[in-house]
Length: 154
Image (cartoon, rainbow, N blue to C red; front, side):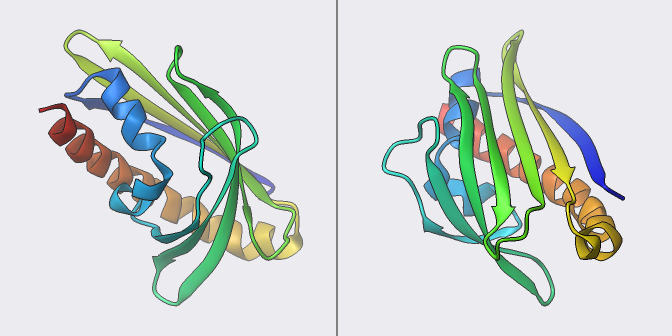
């Protein structure tokens, strides 16, 4: 396995701006991303090229630091993308793209992830494990975003 490509969509009873605000608030990542234990470092301003570091802890025994870099943040189109790498220097990476769209009185949050496995250990071992984990983690994260964005909209 050299690449993983997947996506998920979820309706949210909140304005697109409220949903986008939750997703782009780096300090709040551990509140909705079930795989993030804590934010180690966050940028003062979220802009093109801004970086943050989190401690990942998606399952028993697995723990690592992850570094993300903003590739796009478009407040008008409500689109946010960033590239994530393991802080250990492995060249494998993931590109995350979040898009929020209005639909009637709700919003649709869409997320896609493209994982590029560059080393043999990631291709043979970590990739297949993370593929399964990511589907579960993203589903749980979307449910949490629904709760957070919905409660902040009230």
